[in-house]
Length: 69
Image (cartoon, helix red, strand yellow):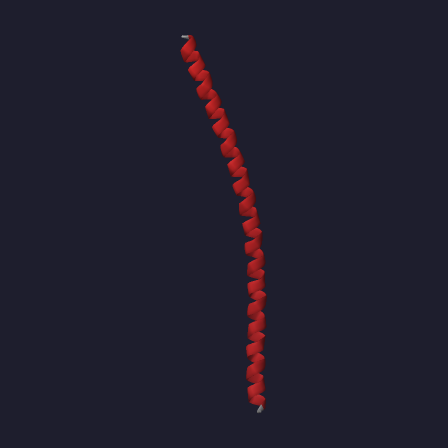
């Protein structure tokens, strides 16, 4: 096999390794973002539940006031 063939093969391998590195970095970034979004979602769900409880409490108090009147 000629030296040209090996040089072309080496270049392709270098490109593949470079692409692999890029994909590994992107994958790491996406995993980090996924973790952050999951945390944010959990916080939003908790806030939603707290808000719902407060609104339900206000409705109950209003109904109680209405019945007293």
